[in-house]
Image (tube, rainbow, N blue to C red; front, side):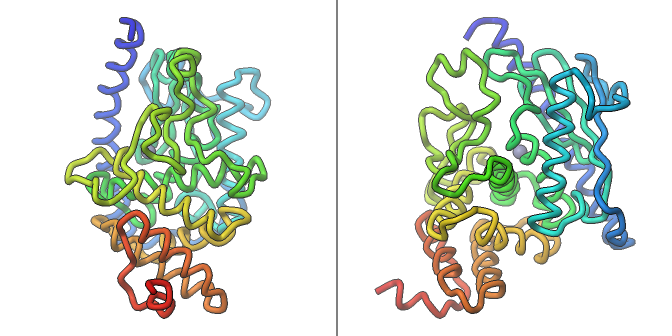
Length: 336
Ligand SMILES: [Zn+2]
């Protein structure tokens, strides 16, 4: 790694720490606000999407862009288009009105910092770096990356998973799962035609020349072609593990369940996941086992006449070391 790349990664790491602290504060604030008043009624038709330009500084939000939908700046346009797409995805597929389900404006800032190799949700808005051009290009150009970051906002308003240990891994995985589903929905892919890669569209030339093809691979979390390799079985989980690494367990479970159910990932597997997200309520320290149990419960509740869905959910989690423990009628038959 040359010094330019190293310096840009060091800046990225420092800024990430600040973002995590900010996000934790915002989550606490959301928790108390929701607890005090409840969420506002679901009123707006579609959320407003706004884009700001940091002009390569680290001050947020930056300068407001008047008509992002007509901008000649590729980052502004990609951010506007992908964010608008994610809002439609949540609305059309899950009936959700923006991140808070109450139509909140989706605000994003682009051109954050210099050569910043990351994107983040800070608890109230999205921010995208330009990438250093070597490891990453402009991060807003990855539809899955945009949906990943926005899903952190949905999690903040729903399960409120703390960003550490098992709940942190689940938080990260939910963002990958909904990020990948959004990219598949946008490209009209079935579970078989999808590549299940995260971040494949934002890799820079150097990363590609070194043989990397993605940030993470939901179908193969341990693949050496991933810039960020993950664990793929709960046996490998250790307390304190980075959420981006432990999330591989739940990513692989979702992939296996979607593959078993065929068709579109957002139709059954996605609905089961979203049902847990939207109905379980605040569960800051949820464990992976509890989440697995919750998905089985949702599969049975949503598809009482289609036991294949619950069976696929059961099998998928079992294969990553998290066999759901709630009463399950089909379990005995499958174990034999
Ligand atoms: Zn994330």
